[in-house]
Image 1 (cartoon, rainbow, N blue to C red):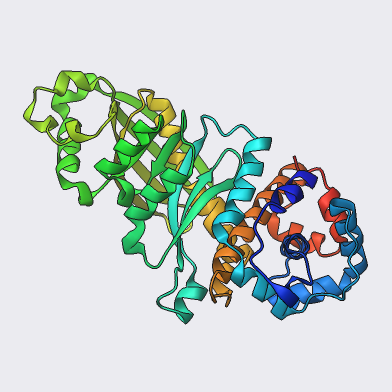
Image 2 (cartoon, rainbow, N blue to C red):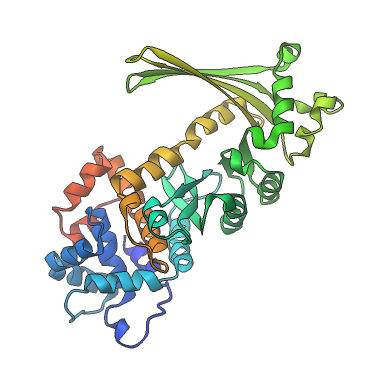
Length: 378
């Protein structure tokens, strides 16, 4: 944790004059520990800082070597700092720290978008939609791009790919990101991809459907799994064709041939049975990939939804992001970033304690900030 604090001290501080009473790294220290303990509104963060004023000042002195003599910052001070803080520099500082502690090479990176509904409902022209690059293996957000609405998501994905190192990594994206230009960018940056193909790529989808007809069954590799939990049984069966060179001369390969790096195609059938309602649902999905291992593709498709379950759900339901009213200037963006950083450390706490994140925040609320930071997260 000491190394993270040092990384955050590299963030430029744009404040001037009387606004510099409280150092930026102290403000970030208070907000981070407050979020870890379940304090969300600025008035709650101010209360947290008042309750643990002495411990926070002692902790700050240990980390920075500086002594603070001022009173607790007000809720307006916290809000002012987060409005003026450069979110790009904030994320860069955390990403640099992350790269220094963990190996980011060869990771599975899920890219997906989410709307900050509290911001959207209050300010229609704000950049209320985030497109995040999430590493499931580390349960951390590597980077994100903020946009005004979902219609800009394709360009945001391209921008996000420019911000992150994807060499030897596999990028999975939902159908909106299934674009020729995105596949090209991933391959040129040394990465691999698994794309979900839907009606927005109708030509490719039609060819995929044709390839998995009985005439080509001799080329198909099968993978399957059966999962039970939460009153539901889910069977997943995937058919894959890996050697695509045999189809290159066929008429039904024209669209598939446009995808740079393509090595395999896949048809996934999901059958879900709800024990309570006794109802069954069947879903069919198609995928293209630059990988040649069907079992790996099968696992990556399953793991892609960790970005929904482990990131978006936690931000919305546990950290209450959709109810947040922070929206002025960079306030919502920086709040989103610090929530994601806190969520990463809460996930590390959860790994060691086996306590759900919601309960961990309640437990952290009974601990001093110094105790929260002294915990061996890594």
